[in-house]
Length: 97
Image: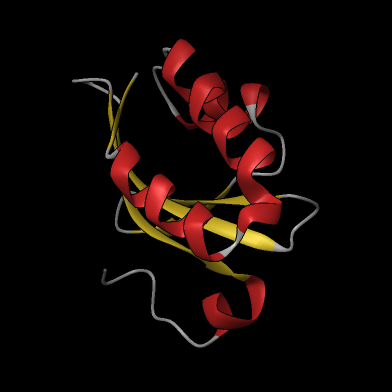
């Protein structure tokens, strides 16, 4: 799957270096996968949740951080829409971003 855009990960890691390994690992794992639907995505990432509007939330580093990605299974593209702390995620309407 093509994950767009790695630059958002680089920028987030500059501010939160403690998530560097976990976030880069998540990126590599998703980039290697080719899930055709939500069930295949959940097999690869058991903790992923569908939040609506083609957006999925991934827990990073023991749920300390979260990534929201808009995933299009047909063209195999994942657009990173949000990376943040769990506390900031709770204040954000991620279905609309």
